[in-house]
Every structure is written in structure tokens, then in C-alpha cells.
Length: 218
Ligand code: E4P
Image (cartoon, rainbow, N blue to C red):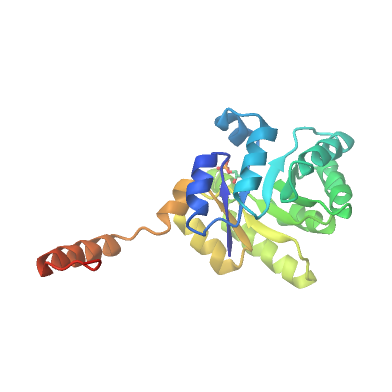
């Protein structure tokens, strides 16, 4: 499973990239707002910091305007994936941009039929939002499983990018189902390494090591 980080915080991205865990980055208008920076500037920095796909979202709602914005965003760097919403205009923009060789991430997906449309429009990534479905009492993980089955049935190459992830359990469940990618808030990615028995075991080992009076580096 690939890990993308869901943030426009360049310091977080660089710190996590140094661990080898960052295969790409996703941003959205809310994350750009949170960064307090200009989209072109922060996106260019992110694209230079990671070699994998970096999603940058259009703000237009009409297909031709989305395509124009998508082309502008794609000029920032070769690893840009243009993010378009799952509307008919977004699907049309997806088809045009994909046909021209640009990576496209179709976002705000909340149903399996929407995911089927995105694959048929040539999307590189489909972003089903797990957490936002769970928030309203629906089952976000069931959507990931449905999309996996449909894409496998028809051998679609569109990658399932599990988004709106809120917990470490979301990551584990999405990995078991076979989502191709999970985009994680930095805090969730960091929590994946946590285990109380690791902490307890390390504490004991360090205490015993101190008692040996030895030093590995002499
Ligand atoms: C990623 O591409 C999405 O924009 C993001 O995962 C949405 O997450 P949220 O529902 O926590 O805002």
C-alpha cells in the first residue's frame, strides 16, 4: 500500500519523507487555506520535496474552466495530479486531462457508482472519503470494498486512494481490503508506529543496558 500525506505543511512533509514513508501528497482548498500560502508556491515546494504524485485541486466548477485550471496546475511540476470533484463537469475535465497524459485524482467520491464513472473517465486515482461517510452513520470502509470489487471485476487501472482517514484502524482495514493508496493526516501516519509494548520493552532494554556500563561506540 502506498502512503500519501494529506497536508500542505511543507515542514511535516519533509520530516515524514525522511522516514521513507511518503509516496505522495494530497492537498485540497481547505489545506491550502490552513497553510496560509499561495497554491502555486506551496505546491511547487511540495513537488520538489517528494518524487511521487502531488494532488492539487481545481477551484472551478465548469468543465472548460476546470481544464484550464488543471493545465495551469500541471505546469507546476511533472508529478502533479490534478484533483477534480466528482461531478459531470469534473468527469469531463478528467477525461480531457487524462487523455492529454495528465494524472487526475477524482475527489469527493461517496458511492461505488461514482467510482465506476471516474474509472471510465480515465482517472488515475479515485478518492472515496471514508471518515465523512462514517461521520453521518454510513460505512466508509464498505465503500472501499465495493470499489475494489468493481475495479477488479473490470480490470480498471484507476487506483483506489482511501481518503478522509481519521484513525489507524481505517488504515489497517483499507490495507486489508486492498486499497492501492491511503492518504493520511500526518498525525495518523505517526500513530501507526505506536504500541505500548514497544515503549515498555524499550524502557526495560535501556535500563538493563545502562546497568551493563557498556558503550557500543566505545
Ligand atoms: C484528500 O484528498 C481529502 O481531501 C481528505 O482526505 C479529506 O479529509 P477530511 O474529510 O478529513 O477533510
